[in-house]
Image (cartoon, rainbow, N blue to C red; front, side, top):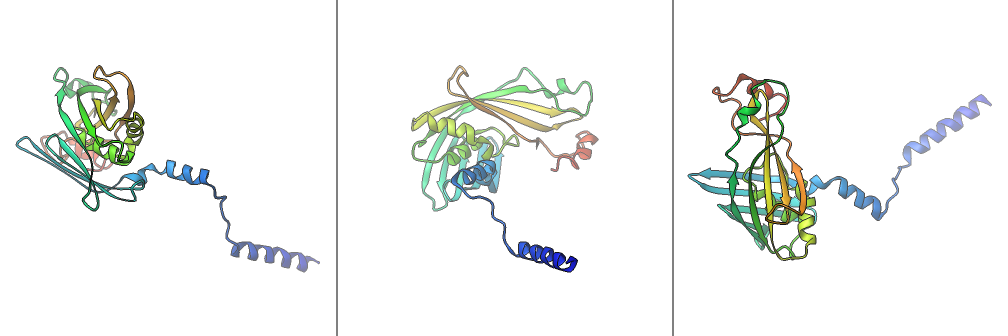
Length: 240
């Protein structure tokens, strides 16, 4: 009897190991997977920016699940144009130059060295006029927003999808978005920074479209020996 029981148990284990186990499939679960993997819409293939003698050149490429193709965002000075991978023009934007905050300096936050990030400090504001909203996707709008920022701030196009959806839902083909920018610096190395962007519907910065905080970015090289030695020590935790 004991041998029979052992045989039955072994048989059940063998059968279960050969039988694939499937998760329940539905449209809801598919939507949930896509929602939880929004970063898939922001796989950066190329990210190039250059600023020489006041001329800004930027090229961002990312794969858009919504469009099922690569999206190319090009910026020259204050003009931004979005293309699909076949070179077709999708949308454009015009950036009104940044109004910078000059009343505050990062060093104010570094008087007391501590292993922490500073509070957010205001760095400036601008606005971007986007044209072609109704005929393009939220991913393309998010890419245009990213290219409109004075710096990347450690922010991705995927993180801007919610703001892009808010712009799309307004139902206007030509729409101006107003942005405020904030910074945060690491206490012992002020070139290790984070950025935050708040977007608004109105010129008086009311009617919030949302805000996004970046992870971190280096506002200079930690291997520049005019910078504190702490910068080079932080590279292990914050890769350059």
